[in-house]
Length: 72
Image (cartoon, rainbow, N blue to C red; front, side, top):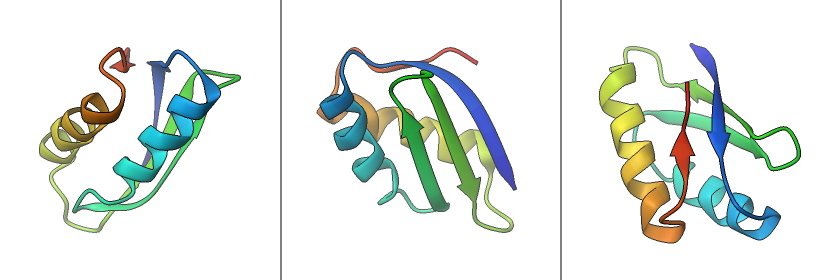
């Protein structure tokens, strides 16, 4: 399953660092972040609990960029 989210990230380098961390989260097949559009696309592994994985994505993201926010 693929989902798109509006996000808030402060700089392009931060977006790259967050993207790298998100791709390490169990349950994520592939994640991409666009700093220019402030969007994040996440492809979840089949059978993954979307809410639980999103919580882990946010937790991992905040380790490298404390100001990172998922808006929707």
